[in-house]
Length: 279
Length: 143
Image (cartoon, chains in turn red, green):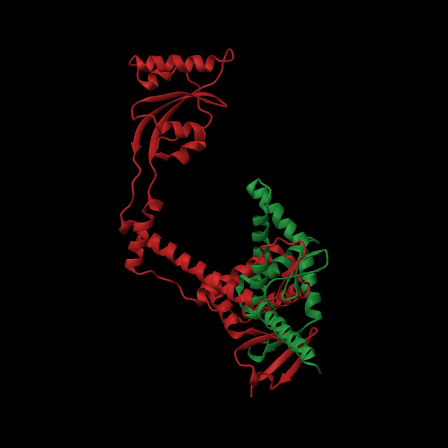
């Protein structure tokens, strides 16, 4: 017969024969079981961290931590944390939704479905145009408006055949945030020069100089060094991405079905002035 | 009973039956009732506080930088109702006992408020919890 030992209100007492009926349980905390599997998992983690078998004192400490966790969980529930704490509620709801989706099994689309999806949504996978630019910034120095004058002067010099770098050397100011010399999408470029200028750069041909563009910091001349046109990747390149998207859509359908079924057998009472369509 | 009386009785019975059937069919749909002013809804009798709904509306307004429309308000309330359904389902499915992330969230929420009382507060709190609890260890693990 298996014997159990108990610790009641800090006192050790014996619970003879009790464990014979509770297989696979490491401890009971106010009647709630700490499963042997949870304890074994915690021991495995300790082994993985230390690289050796935990000694008796370590095993006791590990079980003690699980007991402490169980006590805290029970107390948190008792105090209504599940109802009052936003983060807890979000975590619980997310965990439940994950379980619902998992229970339906991970969806893996077949090749035909992937191909159909690609044909219908190819534009979604398009890699946007990217541009390499050099920016010259001009800020007012001696008087209001001289930034624009210098920018126009530089543009004229460039038009006369002077290279961009040479033309800007004396008259341009250091940019507020230097634009890196790599291919950037319009969205990325907008982080440096603002969305309006980034859009305008799209119309400047390679080798040409655009501007002067007005900005809150003054004016800018921008030369386009290189441009990689927008392209649509081949099906092979985005196959797994499409599968992930289809799996996500399947998970959404499972979640919607779950809510549809649950709502039918859930009693929801709305306040008389609640939004009308909360169904 | 006169024929006219019988007819009325039959009509009354039919109306009653129709009402009962309607009640059975629609009884589980959203009901509108005079809830306490502090509540915006109940889900299986569990309350959703109006303050919680208003907080969600304020968060939406802050995120979108615009006041929520009626449709937005309905969607936000629907999300709160769905969240409550998920929480109730999670409790029924035993996630509070079995799910690591849920247990960590519960203990973290409690410990955060305890530890506001100082670094020794957690130890003291756990000791008092232990003193008020029954903990039974498996013989092979008892030290």
